[in-house]
Amino acid sequence: MELETKYNIHPLLEKRWSPRAFSPKPVTEEDVNEIFSGASWAPSAMNEQPWQYVYALRGTSGFDTLWDCLATGNQPWTKNAAVLFVALQRNTYEKNGRLNKLAMHDVGMANAQLLLQAGAKDIYGHLMGGFENDKVIEVLNLDENVSPVCMGALGYLGNADSLEEPYRSREKAPRTRKSLEEFVRRL
Ligand SMILES: Cc1cc2nc3c(=O)[nH]c(=O)nc-3n(C[C@H](O)[C@H](O)[C@H](O)COP(=O)(O)O)c2cc1C
Image (cartoon, rainbow, N blue to C red; front, side, top):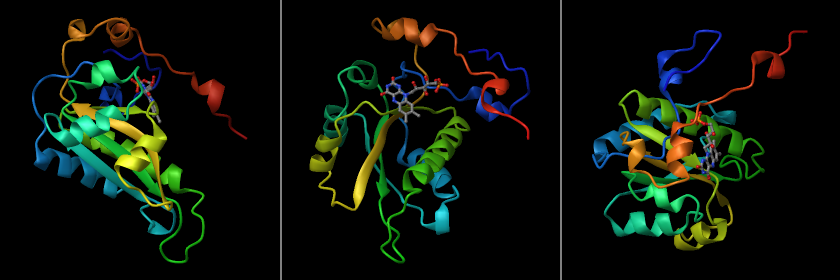
């Protein structure tokens, strides 16, 4: 999809978007490991690396378990994803037990790198805040020091026309961004 950008951005950033139509082509374990390696090289406060990921490949019971945790609005289009994952944060620093107020920020950093690493392999990711938090905690048996941040779907691009409405229209809608003037100012 063509982006209308006033300034040039790196092709990997330009290519990244959040699709809903995924191809049946599977994503291999090797690809998944490469993608999570991309995440692991994100910066983090005190190099705490507070991110944790749980993933499952389509066609496994793990996939069904994660899919069941998604909000109903995310379930129809994620059925065809090659991979579903949950991004988790460790809430305290391992070194001193103090609350890590930047944990969610750093998981976001890791997620961004994950998406770009995937994009470099023509694999696309779609993050989701629409999921049942308590269900994730229950099915993954998380202790209170670990919290779900978001879920994600990964896969090769599929055909937008294979989607049911309203997802098909959303898939084809132009992407928009605030102008720099709206969120950047020089002092
Ligand atoms: C933390 C987070 C939560 C999101 N939650 C959802 C979601 O539950 N369902 C959905 O369809 N998209 C979700 N999105 C995708 C956004 O809607 C999407 O990133 C945004 O519209 C910009 O589009 P783009 O990623 O294609 O540039 C989420 C994205 C992020 C980063």
